[in-house]
Structures are given as C-alpha cells and as structure tokens.
Amino acid sequence: MKVALIGIGGMGGCHFMNYKSIPEAEIIAVADVRTDMAKGKVEGTGAKVYATMEELLANEKPELIDICTPSYLHADLAIKALEAGCHVLCEKPMTLSTEDAQRVLDAAKKTDKLFMVAHVVRFMEPYAYLRNVIKSGELGKLLRLDMKRISAIPTWSWEDWMRQPEKSGGTPMDLMIHDLDYVQSVLGMPDSISGIYHALRDDNDFAVANLMYGDIIVSTEATWFHTGIPFDASFLAVFENGFVKLAGGELYRNGEKVDLGAAKCANEDLGINVSNADGYSVEIRYFMNCIKENKAPEMVTPESSYNSVKLVEAYRAAAVEC
Ligand SMILES: NC(=O)c1ccc[n+]([C@@H]2O[C@H](COP(=O)([O-])OP(=O)(O)OC[C@H]3O[C@@H](n4cnc5c(N)ncnc54)[C@H](O)[C@@H]3O)[C@@H](O)[C@H]2O)c1
Image 1 (cartoon, rainbow, N blue to C red):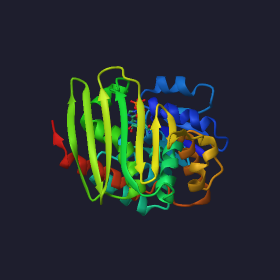
Image 2: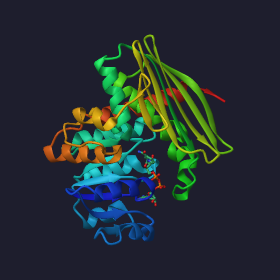
Image 3: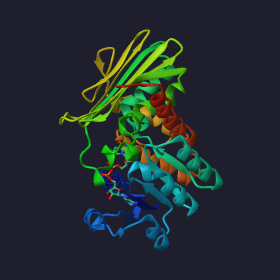
C-alpha cells in the first residue's frame, strides 16, 4: 500500500519507523516544512520529500495519507487529503474544536474514503485488557476508574507549537484526550462532567476531570510539569470483585501481574492477527487492514473521535479555572 506521511517530527518519526516494519506498507513520500530534517530521516528508504502536502499530492498518488502535523493543522489537511481521494489516518486530537471536527466528518461522508483518528490508547494492550474486563463483567460491576497521564512540558515541538494553547489545546486537548477518548469509547458519553483546570503558566498545565456515569465516578488527570518528570500513564479500576491496575508499565489484576502476551486481549477486538505489538503498530496495521477490506474502522469511528473533542470542550466549559 502506497503511504504518504505529512509531518515527520516526533510522532511522524514514530509512525515512519512503524511503517518500515510493515511489509505491506511502502512510504512513497513525506511532506514536512523542514525538508532537510525530513530528508535526513528518510535517507536510504527511497521516500521522496516535499515541503507541503499540496506539493506532494501534485506529484504522487498515495492510497493512504497519514497526518502527523501540529494539531491545529489537522482539519484542513484531513479535508484536503480526503478530497484528493486518499484514505486518511490522522493523529489525535481529530481537531481543536467540534466545529472543525464537524467539517472533517462532513468531508469524510462525501467520499468513499476511510478516515480514522489515531487514538492509540484504544489499541494498547493494558487498556484493551481493561476494556475486556469491563465489558465481560468478569470482575463484577465497575465502581470506580481513576486514570493519570503525567508528562514533562513538551519543549521539543516544532516552533514550540505545543506550548501555545491555541495551537495544541493545552493538556486537556493534547494529553487528557487520550484518557477521555478511552473512557467514552468504553462507557459512552457521561451523564455529567466537572473538574479543575490550571491554565498554562510557569510552564505548568494541569487538568483533572470527573465524569459521572450513574453511580460510577471516573477521574482523568493530565499534567505538564515544568520539571523533567518521566512520562507516566497509569490507571486503577475498582470492580465489585477486584481491581485492575496499571502502574509503572505493569498491569495487575487483584495483585497478580498480568502476562499481556498470554492475555490475548487486543486481538479479539481487531479481527487481525497481531500479538504483542505496541499500540502504534497495531493501530496502523488495523487501519491498513480496514482499507484492504474496504471496511469502516469500527475500533475508532470518526463520530467517536468527534465525541472526544466534544468531551474536552464540555470539560473546559465546566471546569473551575484556577
Ligand atoms: N498518539 C500519541 O501518543 C501522540 C504523541 C505525541 C504527539 N501526538 C500528536 O502528533 C501530532 C504531531 O505532534 P509531534 O509531537 O510529532 O510534533 P512535532 O512538532 O515534533 O512534529 C510536527 C512536524 O510537523 C511539521 N509541520 C509543520 N507544519 C507542517 C505543514 N503545514 N505540512 C507538513 N509538515 C508540517 C513540523 O516541521 C514537524 O516536523 C500532534 O497532533 C500531536 O497531538 C500524538
């Protein structure tokens, strides 16, 4: 499958490495405004380098366009790529507003091309495992879910776009959306949402949301600290008959470590033969498989990605600003 990558910075570089390990994928071209940097990254692979997606599309015919640019560019690039007749995989968040997300939904509906947002957490094994435990009811009813995503403030992004809330959406849209998206993909939209938001200042940005589902309370916390704190994503899910906990990269069920390789968790949902792969490779292969079989991507529908943007907006509207 002929693939073109738009943006080959941090996340684009990660996607690029993953495509290289997928035999069915051929990266024919990359577009990045930093052409010299891009040339260095693709050297020896045969991929052509362009400064813009428009220039790339004028010269190449990719089947799949993968958008890994700064988030404020997602909407317009996704729409142009769909209109050019390409399937589109787009990094999260889908867009920075529901207004823009609606424009992408409309564009996707007008074509016969597939569109998926790369909500990688849905494809990560510990989270797929938790989803199965919630849905199967094997530990009884879910009572409480607490999710955390802690990171040092990103200082590496192109032109420092991540530290500009109007370009990244700050921690709620950039970081907390991972867990909000996961929660709503498993439990649906909550009855209500509240929280606190500490706006970006002194290079600290801090968000906590509480989502009510009847008598179940779900909390998500996302933080950019100015210190060089190591990245950490964790959760604790309490059920009537036990708990599932992700801590320090290890998954536990009622105190026992879970062997994810043996747990066969993600595979059942995906319908493709992948095991022990990290989330990025799984999501890319899943979407390529959808294209191959001309099947809409049920793991992440465009509407559910719209809902995640909507949830972040609802949180921002409800949160106490401090
Ligand atoms: N799924 C995840 O875990 C995860 C993690 C980090 C970032 N992301 C997402 O990935 C996207 C990119 O983030 P990043 O960390 O790679 O940022 P980055 O700044 O490292 O990379 C962005 C790249 O886009 C290029 N670019 C800018 N404008 C462009 C344009 N008009 N056309 C082509 N290229 C252009 C820049 O030169 C840069 O190389 C964001 O949407 C971000 O939210 C996802």
